[in-house]
Amino acid sequence: MLFFRSEDLVAAWCRANRLPQRPLVTLSQLWDLATAWYANRLSPEAKRPSPAEMREIFAGIGLSGPFWDPEASPESIS
Amino acid sequence: MDFPTRVKLAIYEHFAATGARPEAAEIARSLGESGESIDGIREAYRELAGKRVLVLEEDGESIRMAPPWSGIPTQHRVLSGGVSHYANCAWDALGIPAALHAPATVDSRCEQSLEPLRIEVTPVGPVPVPCIVHFAVPAARWWENIVDT
Image (cartoon, rainbow over all chains, first blue to last red; front, top):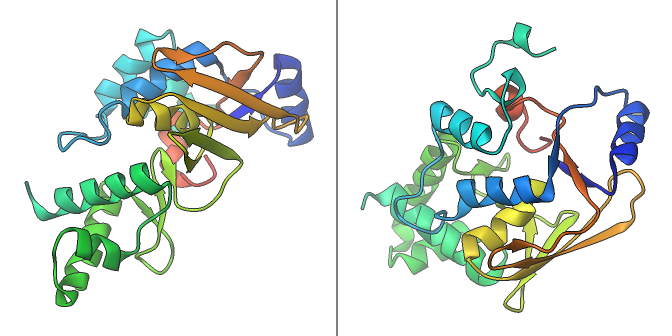
């Protein structure tokens, strides 16, 4: 997961590395992910989200579909 | 609290306080364990790695990742409370202030232009700057090579 200054620079990086362009996430969405994943990381109760919890977190900030599904089959992710 | 959880908390408390990865012997000392129990610490490391809480180097005891912290310097540096931390990726760069519940300055870069990118993070989130994050790897494949994800 890498930072870029603009969508055009993402596209240039993908072309240069011969990689498909994948979903883009805003700084605000990234903060929501960071707090959902890590806000309790220093507490004894902290645990990794289950696949269902991951899907719920992603969907809650508008990220859905096979790309964001930790249990997606390889065929569903081109 | 079981022993691996005590080890996990000691690891994370060390990262939070110093920004650096602890040695297994430091974790043993912080838990008040004797030298003989270093093997127990290593076993806890392996168990935590199996649960994807830690990523270890090939030696089996050097911590490469304790997300959001990186055990080695990266392009994502996070300064908070006078302590310098390193994050594994863009997500983790915001994950460190989220875990610390403290303001921070993230110093990273645009991966294409290599222009420096600074993000100020307040207790309620990052101050907006021109920036976007690209996720190159689908979630189902993150752990095929988590270090490069």
